[in-house]
Every structure is written in C-alpha cells, then in structure tokens.
Amino acid sequence: MGEFDLIAQYFQRDYAPGDNVVKGIGDDCALLAPRAGMQLAISSDMLVEGRHFVSTVSPDALGHKALAVNLSDLAACGAKPVAFTLALALPRVDTTWLHGFSKGLFALADQHGCALVGGDTTQGPLNICITVIGEVPPGQALLRSGAQPGDDIYVSGSVGDARLALEAFRGTVQLDAAMFASARARMERPTPRVALGQALRGIATSAIDVSDGLLGDLGHILKASRCGAEVAIDNVAALAIFHWAGHGFSSDFCREMTANGGDDYELVFTAPPSAREAVAQAAGRAVTPAKRIGRITADTQLVLRDAQGALVPNTFASFDHFKS
Ligand code: ADP
Ligand code: MG
Image 1 (cartoon, helix red, strand yellow):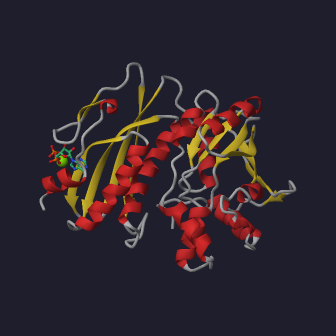
Image 2 (cartoon, rainbow, N blue to C red; image 1 turned 90 degrees about the vertical axis):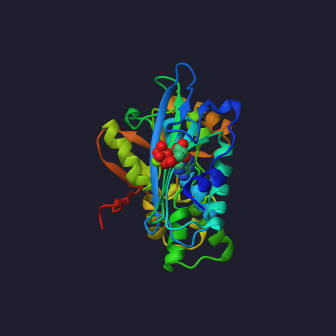
Image 3 (tube, rainbow, N blue to C red; image 1 turned 180 degrees about the horizontal axis):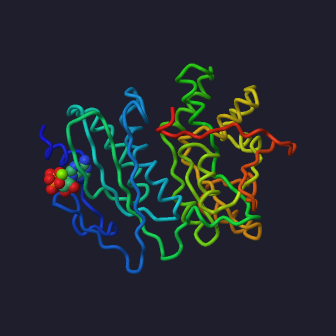
C-alpha cells in the first residue's frame, strides 16, 4: 500500500457541516473557517516509541492517547477543540495497527467534534505528532499567569493513577487484577478535561494540565504568576478515583505517586475563595470532579502539609526529558 492509499483508507473521512472545514485532507493546506471574532488556540504534542509508550501498547489506546494529550492542552486553556493535524512516522505499513490506531483516534475526535484536516506520513521509527486547533473568545483563555495570593488551588479527577500503572509495569509494586486494570486504563486512555476547561472560563484565574507531575506543573503556574503555594499533599492522594491510596502503601509512596506521578492529564487551576460556588457549578456542568487542594501564597515557596497540617519536606522533583 502506498502513502496516498494509506491516507485515503485510514485517515480521510467526510466532514460534517459543523466542522468549519473549507478544505480538509487532500490539498497542500487545509482551510478552516474560524467562527467570527474567536481567537485560535494551537498546541502540539509528540509521542515517541520507547519514550512515551512501549511497543506492546494496543494501537487503539495509542490513537486515543495521542489525541487526548493534545486535547488536554486545549482544555487547560479553556479552548473548544476545532481541528487537528497528524504527522506520523511508521516503520512499515501494518494494516492491523493502522486500523486500531485510527479507530481509537477517531473515537475520541468524534466525542469532541474535532476534525482531522491534514498531516504528513513518512517511513521511520514510530513517532506520532498531533497539532490541535481550538477556539476561545478573546481575553477568555485560561493562562498560567493569573493566580493571585489567597486563591484556592484545585485539581480535577485524581492524580497518581498513571504512575501507579507504570510502577506495576516496572515490577516495583504488585497490584491486584482489578486495581491494575483501573490504573492501566488511566495511563493508556486518559480523559482530557475539555468540558471543565471551557466551564472555568471567567472563573479560574489560572490553569495548567498535569502531564509531568502535579507539583512540577503547579510550579509552572507559581513561576508565571510570581507567587507560592501551600498544598495538602496527603489529601490529594486520598482523592484517587479507585482508592489505591487506601491499600496499605506507605505514605511516602503515596506522596511520590501523587506529587510527582505524571501522565495524569488532569487540570490544576486557581480561583478566589469568592468563586467556590461558581467552581462547584462549573464542575457539575462538566460532570467532572474538582477538589480544593491548597491555596496560593504571596511568597514564592511551595510548601506541603500532611492531613493534620504538619509540614512535609518537599523532596519531589518533576519529570524533565533532559534531566537524567
Ligand atoms: P504535501 O506533499 O503537499 O505536503 P502530502 O503528499 O504529504 O502533501 O499529503 C497529501 C495530503 O494528505 C495533504 O492534504 C496532507 O495534509 C494529508 N496527510 C498526509 N498525511 C496525513 C495523515 N497522517 N493524516 C491526515 N492527513 C494526512
Ligand atoms: Mg507532506
């Protein structure tokens, strides 16, 4: 199968009138008709075999995750997904793989009304790069830079689950079958918090999505907003959706998974205490849990406390691809 047959068979589909696609796959550029007055939000994320996923992951899950991590960036900006492009390097034409990958990809794309409008396909080590395009009303994008001293800090869903699965794959922890399945689903099929991001427009003062670890990503908000934070770290572990934190792991282990886990694709955001009711309503509209985990302070320290309020030493460093 040649490059163009491959594109036609697995990636080219009809567009719906609501897609705002003037010209999709098949010409030198895609043409989109943005809604009048909207700003465009654009973000790229690349997944590299051996770095971001293992070769044994199912192609369907990989298709899902490649788009999910990109939609998560739109969510963190409060943007509505519009379209995306897909740049794909494939070692060989494997039709079973392509079928599974495109199925997982389009299932998530269709959930969010996000049309695939172009890309590039080449032979090479497996590498998937997606660029997403979203729209947001002028001035309403959620940025990292708006947190104010006194603001509450929230996290959606739960963090640490994906890292728990990674540790199970590495063999450093033993999980029972049900817990392993839950953790693995969180790692392989993350849920981008797209509805919550849009519901928080005009309410949250800052936001980021958690890809590299809760504290590291919160640190980006603190740096951009020039402030500090206090986080009730043990209360965050207790939020875990399938309650792994209650299964007899040491508190140090739970703190490490929670503070430093990565691959969560939850939203961390800030809002003033006067907006607590508005945040609760936004979370309700988005059908996404969001819990208070701390507050923004005027100094530039990141202070951790346990459930009783005692200081926990902050020894957690977040993931950085260029640090060993
Ligand atoms: P060009 O040589 O002009 O860059 P290509 O021959 O690479 O165009 O691609 C032909 C068409 O197919 C273009 O519209 C391009 O955007 C699209 N395309 C290529 N690869 C992909 C892919 N993996 N997914 C979606 N569209 C793709
Ligand atoms: Mg090309």
